[in-house]
Length: 154
Ligand SMILES: [Zn+2]
Image (tube, rainbow, N blue to C red; front, side, top):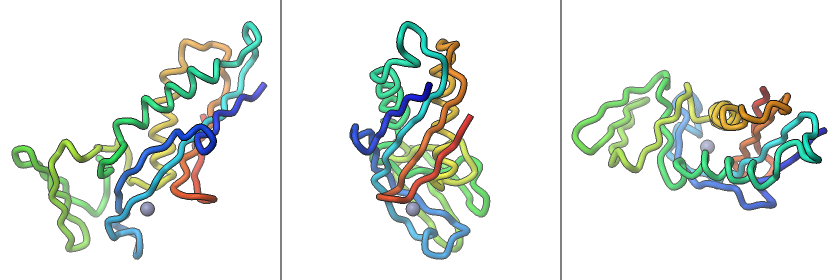
């Protein structure tokens, strides 16, 4: 059995700024209103795979810390991340961004592409769903706008 929690319909979203150093246009600082959806496959247990409300709550919990922040990939190639006092500076391709560290979200990934954001969030969601032993597969999709998204599966 497969259940779906559609973030576009349920308004599970976050707004964040990012940049992709290796990409021509996307190397410029810009932002997206991301939506996040999940599909969970498993055996029914007492009539449910996992209660929709629980999945929805988890998706909101894992995306909330990223909302209204600059996403900085911790493992980002082609960039230097420095911290001084309350500030973080990111340098890449001759550009320099300095911001209050509290306005940044350090993403456990190599980039802040939708692909890498979906992998990061999938790992978080899978850990939260560990107690549900009936769950077999989890897919998490991150849309950076209408019609454009990446899905990670585990
Ligand atoms: Zn972008």
